[in-house]
Length: 96
Length: 96
Image (cartoon, rainbow over all chains, first blue to last red; front, top):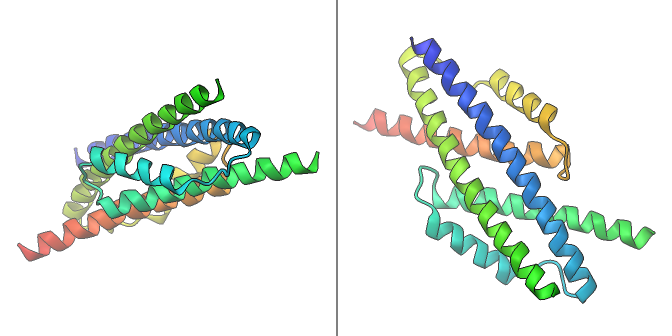
């Protein structure tokens, strides 16, 4: 019985992983769009105030079981990844 | 027009953040359940083969725009966070 439960729970983790994967990629696409608009406006892509706003919103909606510190850590990695992607886009634009 | 677009895109990022938040917390809950079953079976909670399986599955389903390396990096942080939570549970059990 425990084994069946374990398999079932692992399948659920795999499903959740794929959903998270889809969302972080969709998020990166939207951030790329934002980067293009800011590029046209000549505005800096990195915006610490906006990042603070996002972290505050997450804090308001977070109620565990992960700790607040862990959530911030994971999201800072997600923020960084999208920003890195924008930098790659920017370099590509400079090259063409 | 660009400003409206920017606001709209930022709202979408906020929505995606909250969905990701919900999913990483749900994932942590499921991993906690798995930890409890393994605890009863006397099996080690950290399982590098299972981690490899999850990363392979993500690789199969991933098609950008984030790079494969970035996806692995983010998920390793997510794996670590759930494992850390299990360790906290385990310590609590030892204390009662």
